[in-house]
Image (cartoon, rainbow over all chains, first blue to last red; front, side):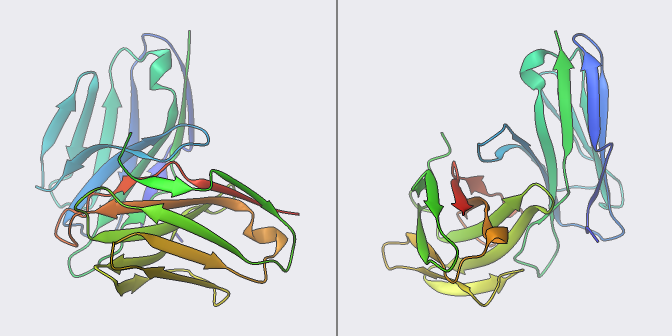
Length: 111
Length: 114
């Protein structure tokens, strides 16, 4: 079983629509990251959140860390075809050197 | 470009063979991580090295081994290869093993075992 559960697994929307991807766990994380990966390439770090309740914005992307530091969400406003990709959340727990990844959400934005 | 380099980009080999994947971390990064990504398993952590020493182990098979050299580059050795070892192998680096554990990934090596 995955330490981090992402939902939905797949998301297909029309250009201009909004979307939200969720990342949930029963564990508390000292930090949580979001990555985007395109086919055949390595994941690219988008953002890191460390404080419960923290909200970070990256252009049309808004990232939120849950108050209890057990969950996170990624919201994309007015999605564009360039937002297409696999979105991965990854968490780091205290005293754990490993980064645990969710299974990912495949986002497809149709023109 | 993350600054992490991996070679080779593609590798095709036969079952039972042994291969070595190479990774150079970003300048100044002391930690190197290896991951395996297959369609049915997602991104799986294999092993981490920090400044030449093994720091953490994940789901790494006994047929696989890794090391980090004094110049901080790392190699992942895969032996007695099986069809199921076909996957993308990623290396990532980070400056420390600290709280945020941000990792920067290389472009990956696609291994095909025939």
